[in-house]
Length: 257
Image 1 (cartoon, one colour):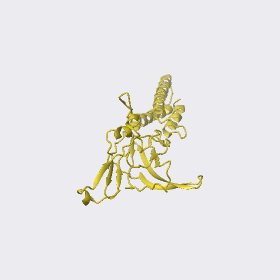
Image 2 (spheres, one colour; image 1 turned 90 degrees about the vertical axis):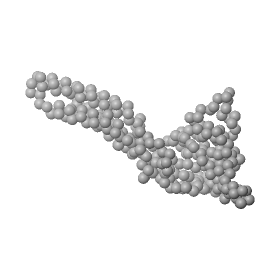
Image 3 (cartoon, helix red, strand yellow; image 1 turned 30 degrees about the vertical axis):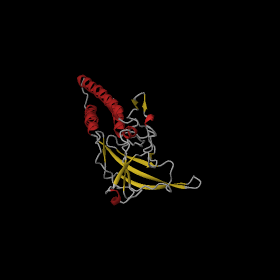
């Protein structure tokens, strides 16, 4: 749709409802919330029942769209802009081998389930992630220098005929902020281990020295057990790779004993 602004009092842009134009289906693969980013609203009756709004936590996009029917911007050259807020959860593989100093890489795949590249092609506005509206997390830090977003196509050769599917690939590099774990786990366990090593090499030439050494060993053993419980509680519940911190605590218990 194009027009000459001079013929319409200099109007260069109009607003339309997303229900009046075709919007390609676009979704996040491996999403824990099976919502599609577009074509989510069929009618307002779908979200109103007995004058009660559908929970916004799982359908944020739908609730936002209910506030306005003119959410698509079309300029006189035919360029269509559709800004859609979206909230979701995705699966990512974790490697906690170096916990709490681990760095995680999460790859998000966006694309269409129904349309191949003969129907939809993606062009990125920028290959760099924009952090203008990014909200800092207390546990994770986004490494923007190593995070990127690209557009690529993949061949599905098991189809007849084989087809290419366009995808948006977003690689996110997350660095765990380890100050909490260092202050509450690493430093206390290091001090306890040093005390245990000193107690282990302390000579027990008399009965009082043997009693003191025994009490010191029991105290450090119980302290290390408490630290180990804290590590198990704070560590991600992941069994494919064990943390070096956890292995160090387990190896310190026989030494204390």
